[in-house]
Image 1 (cartoon, helix red, strand yellow):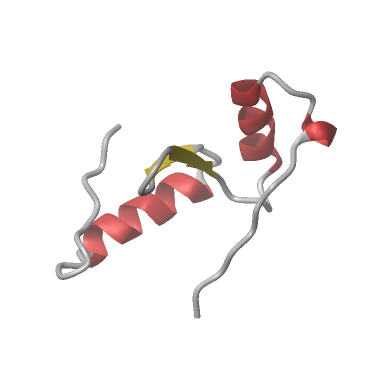
Image 2 (image 1 turned 90 degrees about the vertical axis):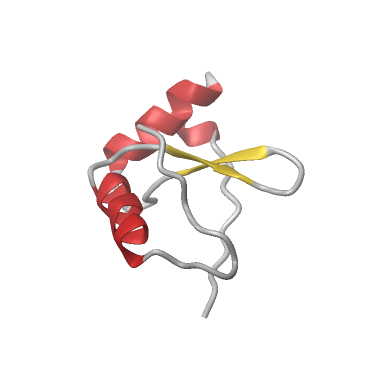
Length: 71
């Protein structure tokens, strides 16, 4: 599934809610940044963490996460 998200001038709450639902289902999403694509998942969902490990071809205990939050 591809969700065209939003530009900085036009935030679409329906699309944000769709991304949240996807994350809550344990899915991994791909997020474009200025330079590369990043993977994101719900860190409280073991199924999501296992998917992330498989994508990275690593064991779950070897994953390193960068956490950031915006308030």
